[in-house]
Length: 168
Image 1: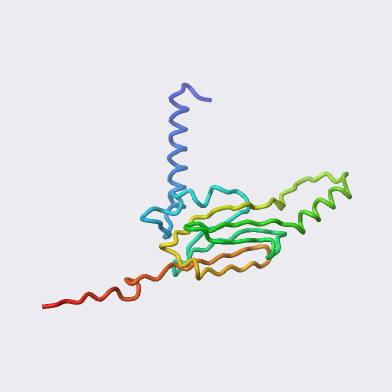
Image 2: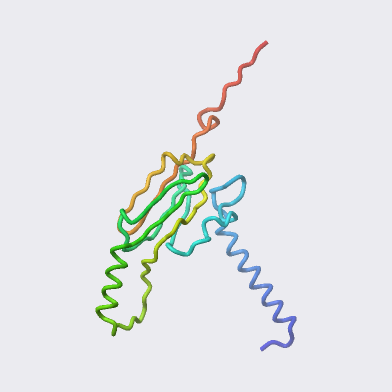
């Protein structure tokens, strides 16, 4: 297959460059924190459960979409602590139903078991308080999807700037 090791390393190098180019398309987003791309903060990709989308809409509102199938609104807690939004959730109903089913039917052998009802414990998501109006946050829980909208703070320069008095 390969004549020598240099061919292997050439293929690896080409594959790495192609992968880097592919990823650079995802890194080009409009949402910035202090001049850096949101993807470079590492704040949004540290958790794998629950699944989450994070993006900004046309008016720069920061939007989080959490997939919480089987959870109920009363199972979910959402707060701000400084520059972080903190998510906690415990799916009491689904866990009970799942445990009851597995205990009642121990002979069930799953071909695929992908639904998760794991608790979410104090997951922190970076939302800088100096850039976002945390007090104006709106959250909607519908059909297992928790959507959180955090508007950007209005600053004086957005409202026409600050008038500077000129004296003679």
